Figure 1 (cartoon, rainbow, N blue to C red):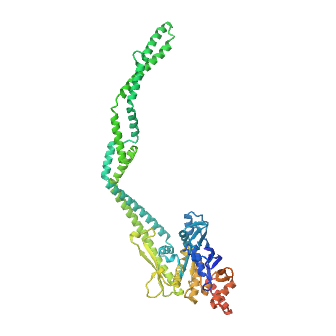
Figure 2: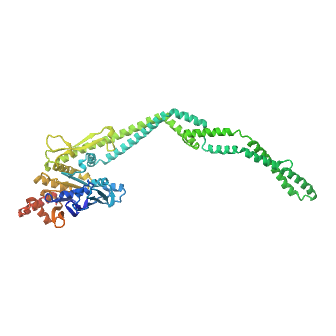
Figure 3: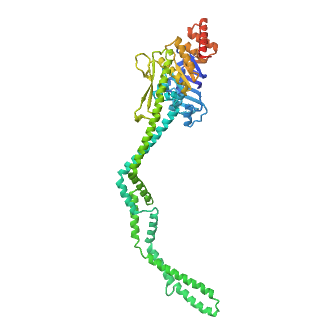
Length: 561
């Protein structure tokens, strides 16, 4: 509900801090006192279009702040939480308009776009009247409104799940068909590329191994020179190490005879050295033979050229070529097995579609039953609201399959006719503002239990009616206020008498500020005087006061208070 409204420098209002109650709040005052300014200010805080003309003359800017308290599960709270706001049940909407027409919007003191402010505001307040209206006049909301009235939560959820499952299966089939089409277009290329890569048989680390081998072969001449030089140093017939060790062993063997075998250890060590040296020389010979053959080099060059050519052709590295072969085989498999897979996916998609149709048709049946019930309920309200010849009709039409959605296969529209013989037309095209407001009252009286909007505003809902009809309007507003907060701007004493809180709007002349609009909450005695004024005009009489008291008593009796 709307707890408070603070207005600064809006047209005739210089400063206004208004505390509001739950239930039915009525606003009365003479024509031109500024009641419309009050609604314009509230609309501004809810995200309405800003106009520099709203800024009080001589002021730099105007500001309006509206404070609401709602449940944690309220749509406004859900919307705020989804956009990262910390939400504890309190919502402060604030709008500032400068005298050059620019405006700023805030929610809970955080700057937001006007569009987001309006989205939150629309979920908090509905305004109905001669010049302003909210959700129920928007045909896009009628199906949701009917569903809320219907209360078919399980059917709606089942339809939503079935639709999304169907769309998922449809997307799977579309993607498979797209891949198959692409694969067919490149089938010949794939087969040729696969055969070529299989023949080439690339390995992930092959390039590195070939480059290393090629580098070694390119340096074979230097390696051969080193090997030959090493062999010459160690194995020369005259000065080689093997000859030198042999001579040393001969000398030591002769000396060992004289030393009575004490040189056996030295002889053994040098003998081992001679054997190791012989092994080393044999290894050098083998290496010399191996490095002397560079016939492998052209083969390596050819292999590297082939690998680099394929890598360049497929725009990958050589190391990625094995992966390319695997990918090509998968894509070719789509061609070879894709038709069977697509047939299976089509069956799954059709099954999901039929499930959706079943759920949507069940929901449609519930909607049609609810539409009949709603039409009858609204019809019963119309005579007392001086709309006895009017017709209200909920039109439910079937959508073309391309337009089916998660909400089902229906479109809903509220149609009305205010004159006998005139076919019903969309409710937002009804010309008379007073009739429109009363239609909205009749409709909201039946929808309020299923609606989460916390505050309803009716402007001049009593326009063109009086007496018993005005009393009927007041009674319905009072009953509606049992389910939500209702704000009513009225000129009818019969309507005002049903109010649970009464405010008067009047103009004062101030020597320094000029003409200003004031809004004041009335005490019981002040309320009696205001109702008497509304009944008799400016001249207050005891008869008017008596009539006002009788009116209050009657309204209290009707409303059960």
